[in-house]
Length: 71
Image (cartoon, rainbow, N blue to C red; front, top):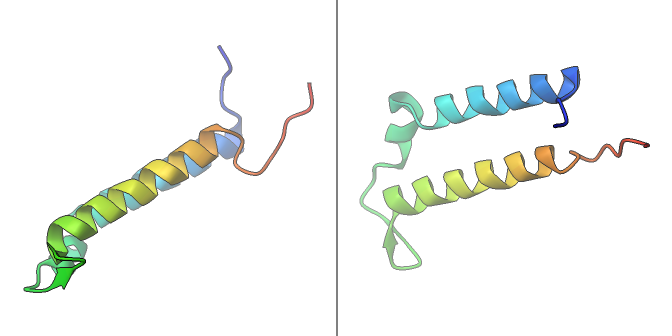
């Protein structure tokens, strides 16, 4: 199994820390409004959007993160 490089480890830890911040109370409370986005309440739409962005960022990092290793 391929072990992540030092830079990749740092980026994964940073992504984890960002997810912790985004899904904790102070920042999460920003989305708790009586508003609609495409007919959906803002809070669940924001939760799904943030989650989707984190999954995309994780997939991008794990697939190379813009850096191609030469083998």
